[in-house]
Amino acid sequence: MNSSKSPCVLLTGGAGYVGSHTIIPLIESGYEVVVLDNLSNACKGDEGQKPVPITKVEEIVGKQVTFYNVDLLDYNSVAQIFDKHDISCVIHFAGLKAVGESCVIPLTYYRVNVSGSINLFEIMKAHNVKKLVFSSSSTVYGEPKFLPITESHSVGQNLLNGYAKSKYYIEGILQDLCNSDKEWNVIILRYFNPVGAHPSGQLGEDPTGIPNNLMPFVAQVAVGNRPCLKVFGNDYDTIDGTGVRDYLHIMDLADGHVSAVKKIETNSVNGAVAINLGTGNGFSVLQVIETFSQVSGRKIPYEIVGRRQGDCASSYCDASLAKSFLGWEAKKTLKEMCEDTWKWQSMYPKGFSTAK
Ligand SMILES: NC(=O)c1ccc[n+]([C@@H]2O[C@H](COP(=O)([O-])OP(=O)(O)OC[C@H]3O[C@@H](n4cnc5c(N)ncnc54)[C@H](O)[C@@H]3O)[C@@H](O)[C@H]2O)c1
Image (cartoon, rainbow, N blue to C red; front, side, top):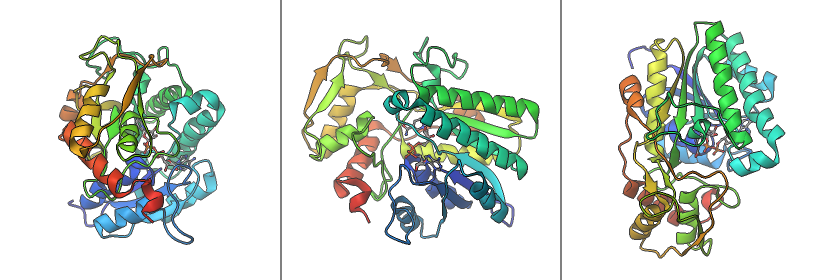
């Protein structure tokens, strides 16, 4: 980094899965990091201690991380963080992300995701901080009309749940904001399927309750926390009939954020640009089970059940814009994704509650 003072990056939701892993390469690249999180979906520390994922990050990087237990909906408390720190850029991870739950409590999802984002953008504007990286999702594409999915694929059509719609609405708000004020530099990252853990095994995904996603479920079956995995449908038009997705190692995803922040810091984005983050390759459910079984040496019992409403046969991205625009591409293989997940899961079979 050239400037004498390192730019300060605020991570909303930085105690969560993607945020906590992203702190590591940000600090390793020389950035100052400030984290805000209300711990609604992150493991709290003991009385007076930082959240467990933040403590783990501090052990990995050998540096303290500034942390605020603040809710994004609390305008004054968020504004105070901006008063206190010379924030250059924000990575906005905070939000609710369980697709099924968003159909049960949609208003909560819109309040936290959409109203929380508006709060943040207003505070940023008031503090003249106009550089933002936003965590969006491949769910904004709905059912793919063609593969691989490019960024010019239609978005917002036939979205089946409040989670996907909330991401789509926030993307629209950001486009309007950038149209109204040309000083904003915004990168919208549409993640495909982040999986895996830090290679040390000290930090990983720690879902509360029943995991919504395949990889943590497979890991919990492998370690013996759950008896059997349900595979939803084996009659899709795919290599083996099971659903195909674009899985991406969490540390590759974390590096993608550093590339986005570096790009934003050059002030050359001028508006809002949406970028896919994925490997560009799809793997089926059975391929994931097979690879996980090989690396863990554990049998993973599964049963085939009917298709799940809202699932499509295949989804994987065209990742070429990330390469040309950000200079980023995913490097890690499915085997590494499974190995690092297994390392984390076997070291901490019950997640962060056993890591305190
Ligand atoms: N993990 C994925 O598979 C995936 C895929 C696509 C997009 N995303 C998006 O990436 C972002 C991060 O995902 P994640 O997997 O790390 O989720 P996560 O739930 O692990 O992290 C989100 C964090 O935000 C915090 N948070 C929630 N509401 C808050 C509020 N009102 N104020 C302050 N903090 C709040 C939670 O406590 C949590 O620590 C989310 O916006 C998610 O929608 C995730």
